Image 1 (cartoon, rainbow, N blue to C red):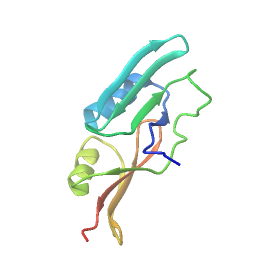
Image 2: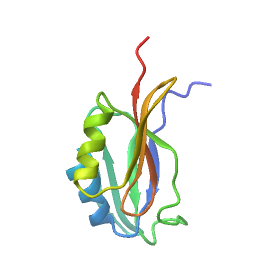
Image 3: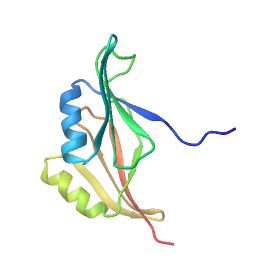
Image 4: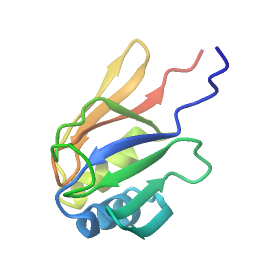
Length: 123
């Protein structure tokens, strides 16, 4: 096997423009692709420097149900500050909690896709 990384993760959304604002304006992701294709809009975002991008798949661009994705782990250097920013923007955040592998919190995007924030434990 010579797999090096995941290319993209699909996040099914009902409204691509709303999702784009959430991921870029609130989470600070950058637009990796925004193309109009015959089958629909191909919209991808990612944290700066990331190898894996997130495809914000809108209605008609696959057999996906908005809000059905769970367990996407996002690493951060300051989970507490990120949770405060999310909460300040009206996002419901669970945690952060101290766990053996680090300090972790969970939240959902506007469509209900489940995301996790983790500041890894030192050592």
